[in-house]
Image (cartoon, rainbow, N blue to C red; front, side):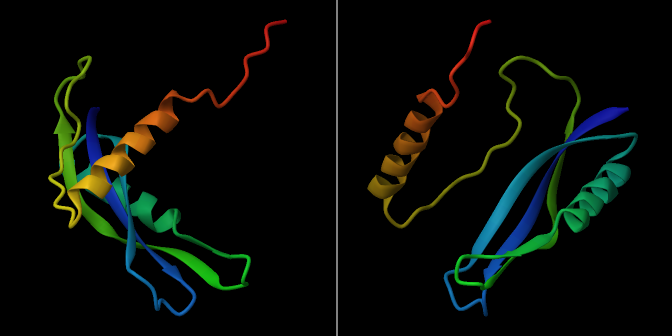
Length: 117
């Protein structure tokens, strides 16, 4: 078996869809014999994990599977290896950097309290 990283993309649609388009891009680790098998497994995951629910306004919120646009082979695993890279071109660089800093700070906040018995 070989390892692959697949990007699975969902469109998030709320209510009638009259809002700024949103897409959820997920990177998934896939185990398969061939790249074709990995792509098929990733598409199956995408199909199976579509879902919908009603929000507080009773609007339907839907994660609609779009496709698997990218698939990378991991020939070997090593500490610190690059799994994925993407160039961002935000319209407001300062807002983007501020958002990244806020997300990074959240990673450093303790979320769970350890209880030692």
